[in-house]
Amino acid sequence: MIIPMRCFACGKPIAQLWEEYKRRTEAGEEAGRVLDDLGLKRYCCRAAFLGQADMLPEISKFKKS
Ligand SMILES: [Zn+2]
Image (cartoon, rainbow, N blue to C red):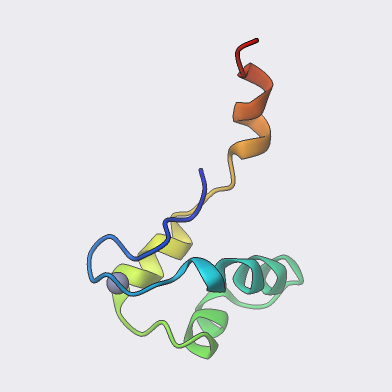
């Protein structure tokens, strides 16, 4: 789905970092290194990024109407 605005566990705003994280990991950079660069030190925030999958293109196929 869409990345949550804030980390569910600690409340740190994380959504503004998602685009850069996605761009850099797709360019072949190591995910752990990108998370360090973005300043995500707590494992709760890192888990929110690592577990994130952009499902919107798939889900929108089944939109009603
Ligand atoms: Zn967190």
